[in-house]
Image (cartoon, rainbow, N blue to C red; front, side, top):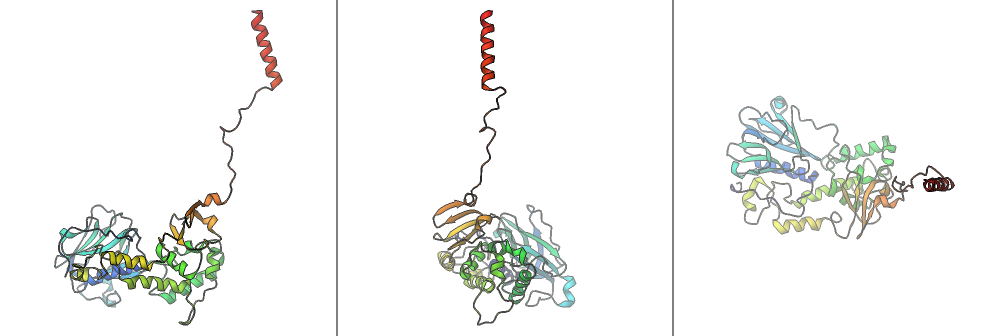
Length: 380
C-alpha cells in the first residue's frame, strides 16, 4: 500500500546534502524493485525541463526491475514476461527489453507515489503503473543523466562494484598499481579513491571513513598505500583498505536509513503504510541519530579537513600526509585554518606601480637645465 496523494515533503535531515554513493544507489534499486514487484507499467513521460532524451518503452504493458553497480543504476523494462532475480530478462527475450542506465549526479533519487498529484515537482522521468501509481526519477539540480541501451552492458570506463564484485575489484586495483606504479606515485590516495574506473561507488563520505579506519593519511602517496596490498586475502587476514571499500558501504546499507530512498521523511504513523514505495527506516530524529552515530570522522567538529584539487573536502584525524602541500587548496587543522598556498613561501613579483619611474637625465644635468632656464627668464 502506498502513502496517500499528498504534497511532497523534502527531507530536512542533516545528511540530505550528501551526494549519492554506492549505498544510496543500492537503496534506490531496492525502492524501484519493491514498488515495481507485482505491478505492470503502461507508459513513460519525460519532463519538458530536461534536455535528456526520451525513453521508448516496450509496447503495451511492461515490468520494471533495477540493479545498481557502484555509482550507476540500470533499469530493465521487459514486455509482459517476468525478469530474473539478478535483474536480467530471459536470454531469448533480451532483444525485446529496454535498458536505462542512470547516473544520479548530485541530487538524483527515485520516488514512488500513489498518484500523479503527489508526484515531485522535479520528477523528470516518470513511469505510470496500471493502478495509477507513479515511479519517478527526481533530480532537483539536474546534474544526473539517463540513456537507453539495447543490451544490459555496464560502461567500460567504470570499475567493478567494491561490494558486489569484491574479488574482481581487488584484482583490478592491484593489477593497475602493479602495471603502472609511476601513475600512482605522485598522487594522494584521497584523489585516487575518487577514480571511478577503479573505486566505483566510493565518494566523499565513504573515502573519509575508509581512510580513517585504515589509518591512512588522505594525502599519503597512493603507490605507498596500494602497492603492498594483496590480490587475494583470507578471512583471517587483517582488514586492509580494499576490504574496507566493501565493509564500510555494507555497514551503511545495514543502517537502512531513508536518505535517497523515496525522498520522503517517514513518520512513525505513516512508515507502515509506505510499504513497497520506500524504506522502513527509523523516522525523523532516530534516523538522523543513527547516521551521525555511525560517522567517525566525516563532518565531525573535532576532525581536521582539507579541500583537495577537485574542490572536495576530505575529513581526517592526525597528519594529512606528505602530498598535502602540493594537492590541498585549503587545510583546517583542529580549529585553525591554513591556506595551502601559504605553506610554501613564494616571492611576489613587483608590480609596475611599485617601481620608481625612470629618469631621463641625471641629477647634475637637471640642475644645469634649471639654471639655464632661470638665467633666460631674467634676461627677458
